[in-house]
Image 1 (cartoon, rainbow, N blue to C red):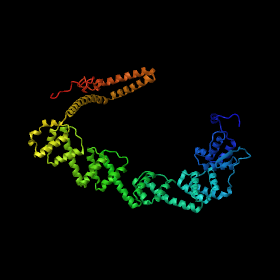
Image 2: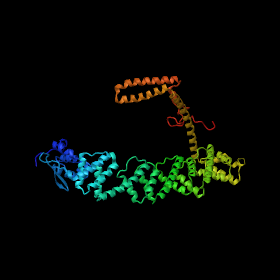
Image 3: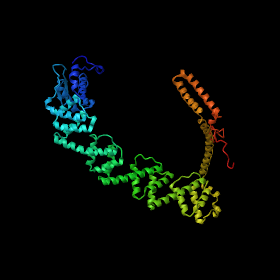
Image 4: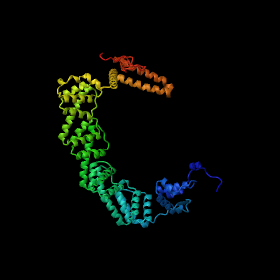
Length: 571
């Protein structure tokens, strides 16, 4: 062993020499994979690292068998000597005139095959390069497939690929048939005949899905999968018609959905798909009425729509109930609970649902009137049920609203109303003028605790100041909108904003340009002031004008104390 060696860094920066005879004599007769493998192996000869054949094949993007096949080819050319095939170990030989002459296959052996293949290529308007023809002949030399059988493969590939035909596709298809032990003309003809039948079926599926290309070899795997699962071709057609557009993967998902339900015939498939489409439409309609965006309708269809339709609810009824659900803030689970309740009560047909929705809408309108006396109340099923109960006690709206007036200051308005109405029911009171004095408004204060009274007072105070701030902000907003209608102001305002950003950048990144930026910003501000003067506005008009200058209509002074501007009761 020598006392010195190249470092790893030296080796990585060195050059790999390729003799010119290799380029002139051998490279034109070899395909790209063979050239890449030869050059990379030549490079590895001068590397010290361990690098086996499997790693080299993976890096080159080819199989180990293909790498062995390539070096067998170079061995026939006398450029390498294969010392071991398993594991692969190759010794590179010098390229010279004495050795290394390519060893072409005997032309007379494949003369008839070449004539037939060229006829096919001329008919298809295609051509193959010399190295591609060489690879095909090498394949025939090294495999058991009959030349006539390979011609069937080439004809099949030409019909399928058209202008995209390559020798690699023909060789891959032929190699696959060889792995399946199909070598003879009869065996290959029978195999490709099956493909041709499926090609017509796949062509129809492609048309139904709007796919504008010819079926590829991997597409047949989908068809084989469906057929192996017992799916009738008509059932697959029905799925494609339902989708109208998409890929074979999308179609495979829908076919899989049918297989989960053990639906394999065309009749069963069309019935199921029609019901599925109806359920999907129901889901989207209900979701739209509820104000919900649905990405995948299938879970909603299976969990909710299927059950609703089986119980006899139609699309119109479900849409009406969804509209009611929107007013109550419902989602699909809440609407489902409502439908469970209606179903238990026997409300299923369209007339019953319409009557229920009309009654609930009337209850909601009455709830809005109650809110005008008692403040904001939650629109809940419980609140509507309470109103329905009051109506069932034969109370008129006038009596219910009278109870609302007397519950205006109660911490829980609806429970207090319920107490009053139940008392009136027991007393047989049916008209406001007959209400006994003992239920006068003064008595209802007893139902609020001190904490509730304090909370109500805080709420009133907050609403008071919130209204003042909104009024002040509205005045500033009106002035801003008036100014923005003027084109001169809009341009000047845009220049000011742009200049302020440029000034901030200049202060950090380019202080030397700050003077020019400030000058430009000053001109923009002057233009904005001129535009405002023309509109009889000033900069201060864009600021809210608060009633109280001390607390800015917040109710609290800067030191945290309450401001004295809040009006006392009775003022």
